Image 1: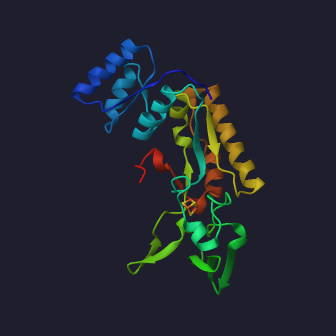
Image 2: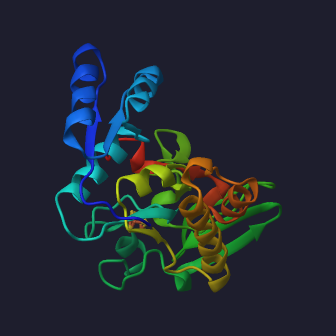
Image 3: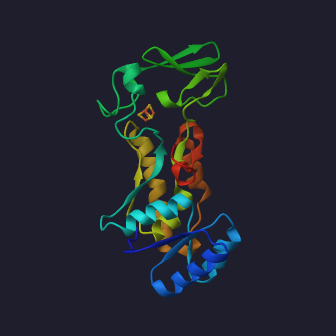
Length: 244
Ligand code: SF4
C-alpha cells in the first residue's frame, strides 16, 4: 500500500467545523480526512478537496498514529477477534492451563472435544461445555470468550459474538491515510484458510492500487471471506465501535 508522510483528520463538520476544515484543506497542503455523522456534510467537504474517512476510529486513531511516527503502520484487516488487552486474559488459562500469555495459544485444539447427541452438537474445551449447536447452526471453534453461557436465566454469547473482523470496506480509507500493511490472522489456522484469505486480500489491494477511484468489493471476494469467517459473520469491530 502507498505510504504518505502526513495526513490530517477532522471530525465534526457543523457550522464552525465546516469552515475550519475548508481552510485546513486549502492552506495545509496535506491530505485531510473528514468524518461527520451527517453524510451530506462529508460530501460537501469532499467537493472542497477533503477525503472521506470511514469512521471516527479510522480517522482519529489510525491517521493520528501515522502522523506521529516514521514507522510504517500495519492494521488488523481480517480474522478472529480477541477482546483481551494483551497479556491480561485469564479465560483460556482458567479452563485449559494454557493461554496466549503462557503458550501463545488460546483455547488450544488439543483441549477441544466435539460431541454429537442426536441432532445436537456440543463443543467442549477441557470438558467444559462452551457451545451447543442445534441442527442447521454453524458450529464455530470453541474459543472461550465466544461461548454461549447461562447468565441471569438467559443463554447467549455473554462476552463476544463469534464473528470475524473484516476491514475490506475500509481499504480505500486505510490506503489514503498511509497504512503500510494489512495484518491477516493466521495463527491456529489451516494452510487452506490462510491461502483463501490472503488470495482475496491480495486481489483487493491490487485492484485498489490499479484503479482507486473504481474500487469496489467484488461479490466473489465477499462470498469467499464469508465462507471462512467465524460464525460466517463479519464485523468492522473497533473500527466502528468504541473499545470497551
Ligand atoms: S479467550 Fe478470547 S479474549 Fe481471551 S485470549 Fe482467547 S480469544 Fe482472546
